[in-house]
Length: 255
Image: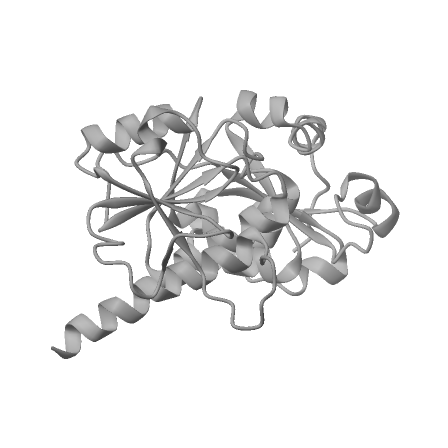
């Protein structure tokens, strides 16, 4: 079966999705790269409107041929968001959050500016079985090309909720019954491996320096570093905390 090129409307959409404004207007995003697209098609195929790629890229995915669009390498390079394109981009609908908050705790990000860090944190949340990933408006767009690519499409399986400020995020969490607040502090606080009730109807915050009345009530936690290193980056810290949650869940099941 011959694969047609993208229509003018589809090409315009592809280009617009490279911008935050375009993503907001269309409620879609781009997912680029062979592995990321494969993950998306395996777990959330119903979200994908169509896939655009080169012969090389499209040969590596298994998807409804009616939703495939073919481009030569040089034209694909013009719309790709990477230096070395792998030859496939999926255009997918951004999911809406469920009305109810799910899980034992909420993981919150405050002013995380690097899309690679956000994507890695999304992957760790998905791997740890954590559904709620909330963030302040100062945080990078989780649906940007690099964030989605770094997250390998993990964002599609999470409840991503944005709030104007961290204070408003915490106020809403409290109204939902998540009234204990913890923030990761590289300079002090209680060990994350020992803090009681860390994941008991709580909010665990990673990111910028917390401030405001609600955060003043939060307990600071830290990741012990016997090597006396000053700090690790946000994605590394988040992964340690998320898998401390997994460890505690596993210990509870054995009791």
